[in-house]
Amino acid sequence: MIDMYKKPGKIASKVRKDAINYVKEDMKILDLVEFVENEIVDLGGGIAFPCNVSVNEITAHYTSPAGDENIIKSGDVVKIDLGAHVDGYIADTAVSVLVGDDIPEELREKHQNMILASQEGLESGISAIRAGVEIGKVGEVIGKAINDRGFNPISNLAGHSIDQWILHAGLSIPNIKENNPHKLEEGDVIAIEPFATDGIGRVTDMNEAYIFKFLRDRPMRLVHAERALKVIKEKYGNLNFSGRWLTSHLSKHHLNAAMRMLVSSRAVYPFHVLREKTNAVVAQTEHTVIVESDGCTIITE
Ligand code: MN
Ligand code: MN
Image 1 (cartoon, helix red, strand yellow):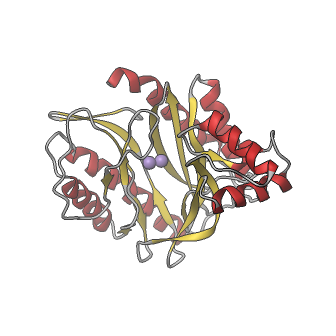
Image 2 (cartoon, protein in one colour):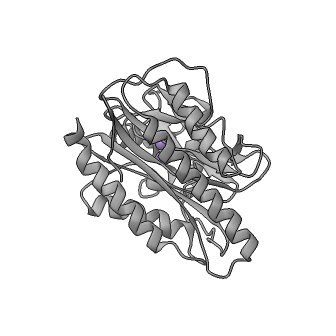
Image 3 (tube, helix red, strand yellow):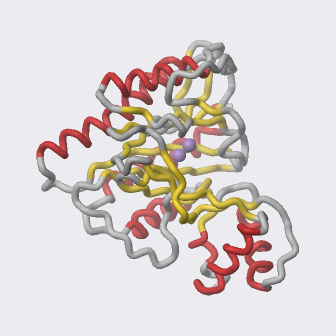
C-alpha cells in the first residue's frame, strides 16, 4: 500500500515546496497554476485534479479559467492545493503562503498565526490518527488546536478518504468535534485538511465553477457539448478537470456554452468556488496519510 503511494507522494511534496518558492506578488494566478500542473507532469505524475489557488476569503475550488488575468497581490493569503497521481494512486496536499514583504505588522502577524493554526490543526490531527480511532475524535483534536491559536476551523469543509482513481472516496474527516463513531482502519488512505479563519468558520458556494467532474453520458443537442463530453470522458474519466484544459479542443466561446449545457443536463458536475461566509481570510494546510495500527505514515511530507 505505502509503496503505491510513495511516488505520487514524493511528486506532490516536491511540487508543493517548489510552489512556495515560486509564488510572488504581481504574479498571475494562471502562471502559478500552470507552474504546478506542468511540474507534476515533468516529474512523471498525472494531475489528479486542477491546481487550486484560492486567495484570502476564497477558500477552495478556485482554479484559473482560460486567460485568467487575476493577479496575486502583496498581503494575500494564497492557498495552493495540488494533487499528483501515479496509476490512479492520488497524493493530495496543500499549503498556505502569505505573499509579499511589505505588509503592515499587525496584518502580517495575524495571517502568519492563521497559517500556523491550520498547520497545528493538521499536526494535531495526524498525531491522533491510528487504526481504531473515531473520526469524530480526529475532528475534535483538529478543531481544538485551531481554537487554541485563537481562530475558528471551517466547520463545513472536511478531509476525506482516497481510493485508486477516487479523490473523495466516501469518508469525511471533520475539522471540528463531531459525534461520528466511525473508526479508521489500517490501510485507509486519508487526506487531512484543516482550514483556519478569523471569520464565522463556514463556507458558501459562489456562482462560478472552474473545476468539473464527468458524471454520465447524455445525448447533447449542441455539437460542441457533445464533442466536449466525449473528450472529458476519455481524457479525465473519474478525475476532476479544469475547463481551461479543454481550450485545445474548443474555442473559449464554444467552451463556455458547452460547459453550461453539460452542467444543466447533469452530464458534468460543477465544483462551485467556495468563499468564507463573512468574507474573512482563510488558511489551509493538507497532507495525505496512510493509517497504521499504531499511527500513520505521511506520504506528502
Ligand atoms: Mn487538496
Ligand atoms: Mn483534499
